[in-house]
Image (spheres, helix red, strand yellow):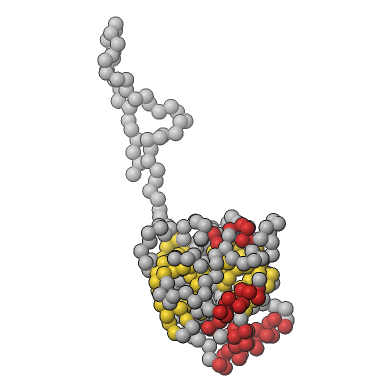
Length: 316
């Protein structure tokens, strides 16, 4: 879920008018000072060899060749023992669940497979691209300039020092690191942190002479999708170094909020995309109501309608 955690591990409730005003004032002061705040998010953790032996053969007759096959020779010193079994696989670490097979049942969360779709999802970093430095999730979207990514608006308030790494896995950046240069948010979010507009489009600078969409492609932005669409949900938990994925049918939380029930989406997964399995379009991001939800097992998104479409047109 969303996912900036409080120090006690619980997520903030939906902001009241007073807290929204205070939050807006704090953001304004921070921006005026040329600073930015990245909310590092909390996370929950789930919490015999055998060797073939050679058997000596009976001596052959002096003048007649032995009729039985020759025994297997003893292993050559220094040669690998091809008959030795490897040690059992210890299995996944607690923070990295097993990779999701293509037919993962609905509502089951597992490590995302490394495929074309998952490579368009990545982690946002503050400072060096290294384990423990990522704080939110984003994904590449299709655009005329081929240089845009999508995340939750509550993830960051300024671009300086933020990089995006698509397909990030175990400390590696297989498709490069892309510097965030600009943030586009909707009017309602800028005015008072409206959770119904908790989405942001980020522009990233070229890397190695290429735009990010040239490197990994981009998902189309989907608007006005059915409330009961089936979606794949992606995210990078703050305490893990691999992306997770869960597929389930979404539903309507209220007038402008979509929800999905997927277990074990903790802090760090904010901004992760809802990818419509029928169209491949992104129809939401983890955010919105209670910044994505107040438990790890249900995630929310602000509804994608003309507001997010207008934002994409403005970002170009």
